[in-house]
Image 1 (cartoon, rainbow, N blue to C red):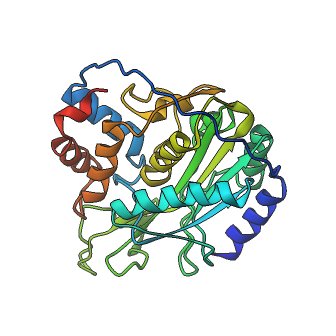
Image 2: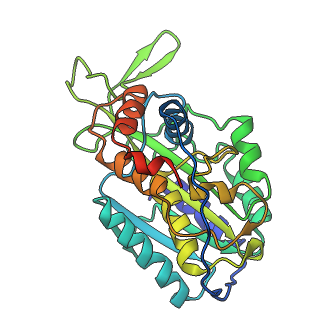
Length: 298
């Protein structure tokens, strides 16, 4: 991890209150079935995952190093084991206690203060931060809506950073232009390098407020955290009712939320099966084509 990111997370970890919640009893949720049209499906895929400035669909590539703070190790191990299992099903190598953590999960009873501290340390919320030592992408800034959603009280909140890479994992070609640097974007081969670029998730940071979890079993919480960790969705209000993400919109997460829904499973599978080199709009279309019909209802 770069020196900048290392310093930042040392500061963030220092303000986390170390605390944990006891597992709750398992319960079952009754689902109301409703249909999701093709247009609605495309809208939700694009709104939840589409990169707003670079016409791409970010995702993890290769290994994911996990760092968990704020709960006893026996609970942290259950969180990690579940993340590792879901990541493996998507073709990712997920590890812990490694030197370059990129997926951070903070459990705290002071989530509002922690979010405010992160925003103070990095007002861009890592949007556009590239952790490479040889290339730093700083042109993307968090929008007022993104800042407002991150600072708004909620039981589970997160932020995601992504950066461009080419086939050999190097940063893409950058060319000077009349209005600043021009970045090779996914879906367009550079005429000099003849390489398709992609957008890799660089950081996902998840904050869980244990005092705002009501009757949520660990197993179900781990399912929700896995969706957030590997989809890297935008933090907003308006998730489809077919997704576990809808439970994150309120200040209190009212459990039991239930297992990962068919919609969530299909979203992750389609995202990680997506061929390289697709633009944002083409990626949305491809993912919608590869969504099983049964996954559009819950």
